Image 1 (tube, rainbow, N blue to C red):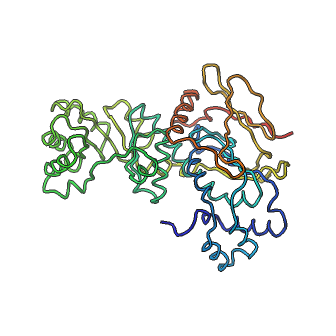
Image 2: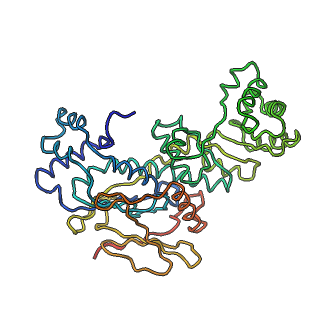
Image 3: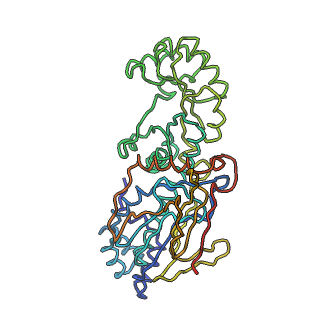
Amino acid sequence: MNDFAPAMLTDQYELTMVSAALQDGTADRRSVFEVFARRLPTGRRYGVAAGQGRLIELIREFRFHERDVEFLRKAGIVDETTAAWLTDYRFTGDIDGYAEGELFFPGSPILTVSGGFAECVVLETLILSVLNHDSAIASAAARMVTAARGRPIIEMGSRRTHEEAAVAAARASYLAGFASTSNLAAGGRYGIPTTGTSAHAFTLLHDDEPAAFASQVAALGKNTTLLVDTYDIAQGIRNAIAVAGPDLRAIRIDSGDLSVLAQHSRELLDSLGATETKIVVSGDMDEYAISSLAAEPVDMYGAGTAVVTGSGAPTAGLVYKLVEVEGRAVVKRSENKATVGGRKTAIRRHKPTGTATEEIVVSQGVPDHHANDRLLQRSFIAGGEPAPLATLAESREHLRQCLISIPWEGLKLSAGDPAIPVTVVPTA
């Protein structure tokens, strides 16, 4: 796959800062960086923090190999002092943050990285690339899961994104509540359930549609899904049931007016005695299309392009900013990009019923705790040593519980305020 180590995802400007800091003696100054979003994508009421599991594993492997350092030296990107520093690089600091699957809002301190300035700043691109991608996918997928109202969704967008992004997108979608993926690499790497059916090419390969269906059923049995819209959908359904019998597991429709076609297909299947045969719909499914089919006899959805591209928000908009140096809060004052200095601690406040009401973020301090408050940050790495990570199944359940906890208005697909307000208390 990649000829370079994960560390080579670093941007050149990060190495420029490392080189300069090594030269002027500031490289080891104790620093705190934070990952947060200034705002949510247009129309969104919450974000889903995702990718922490992948990220911590990548940081464990974050090494500049000999050939990588040699490339940087020959290209004139680093001097000998920096090359030696990179050769010996190991992250020895601390990383704390929101659990994978946690909801976030503008100003939420999703990840906190502390250590020497140089060892922290060199991680910026890796951290943002993983969290921005996975959080964008999980946030979109969570909205689709809510729109599906308990009906399963298959992730099937591998052909619409980069090959490695496809695996990460399948993982983030499953975290958000998707039932399965068509991506076999994600199944093998993360244990995600996989599923799939044939494409139109398989039908076109055969002399006629019944022959194609007969071949698929002969190979896979009746517990398969037949794609019935290559030619005429009604005839395709008749052919499917004639070949497989009324106990065929499912048919899939990938085009047309899915609302009308789902109704007609259900009626036709029932008339043929296939009352238990499921209807799967796919084709440009996003949260709005899924929601529009809520009243139709659809049993399962297939989502591709929309989910792997964040359904209109391909990045979560997360930034990585220095907020503290040697215990002193530092701030950026740029117009529209100002930051709140100091290391943050966050809690989420709930009613006795469990409904979340507010997120409180305190700089260089700890919020006052009440009985129904929940501390949001946890340790991922301490002194360079990773803590045990939650499993993907645990993170998936954590997100499910988080979505249950926010007010119902926060689950709406329409534009509106964040599901809960965030109060940021700056350092004194």
